[in-house]
Length: 159
Image (tube, rainbow, N blue to C red; front, top):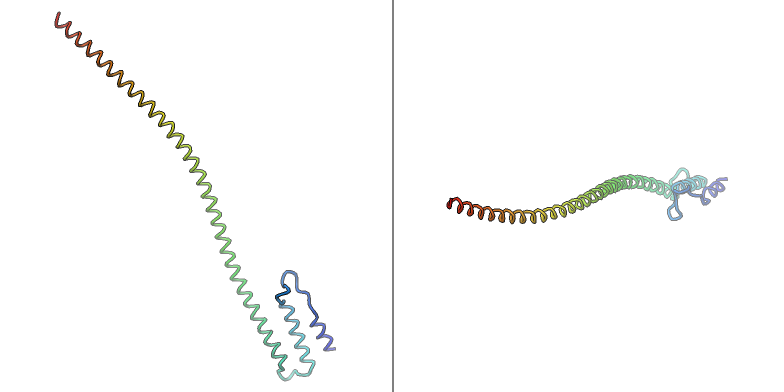
């Protein structure tokens, strides 16, 4: 009877879905195997003394606990790192979007100001031409008044 239960315990067990792979033994499978080995050792009547099999079972159980603890610690470290990475990615994505919006805004402003510069340069050229024309008119009018004034002075001196 004891050998039959040991044989059933040692039969290949299906790993739980998504938890184990063929290359990494499942903790449940290891625990069942260890329990089967312990049952087998006790059925042989070696319960009083510590047998080599029991010692191996005990070492494997300790190793199993140690591996589980390390796995939990690594999972916690991974979760912390993954959280940090996600936060950094979110922050950088936000900064990129913000910068892209600012670039578009400044590009539009540059285009608007460039158009304004073109208009103002045209206005400056037009006003420069107008100023030159007005100065020429002022000079011509001044010359005409000077001639009229000389003519008046000559007429006034004759009179």
